[in-house]
Length: 149
Image 1 (cartoon, rainbow, N blue to C red):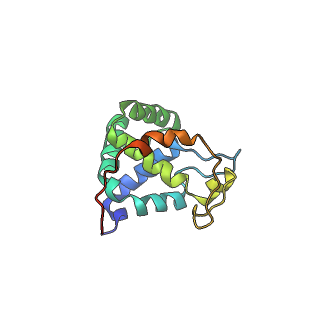
Image 2 (image 1 turned 90 degrees about the horizontal axis):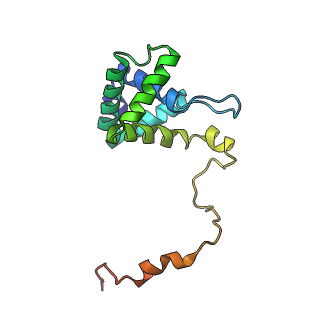
């Protein structure tokens, strides 16, 4: 069974609707919303172990909406999404994280941020030198691993 089929069609519709509230499309920056089909496909394909918590958050969303969140008028969706955010908890945090993680790895979004749409390696990324003394407490710790021959 693929992870996508673990969410019902209604749950996928609700996920798409709340994703649009979390990250709406922007004409100003030329980026899609998190409800974009490509972003949603990535989200559903990589949901994996977070499926149960996302389902839980979608259930909370339906309860707050008094039914289908996607069927609400836009101004009511904003209020219900705010109420969901205010409830917090692990399920809501997981829902937000998976939406944002898939959104910010979309090539169009990366380009709008002035970043190359590529993996960080093998080319690597140059980081400015920082305060290396911050690692002194770690260096001072005794080894906690087992030596091998």
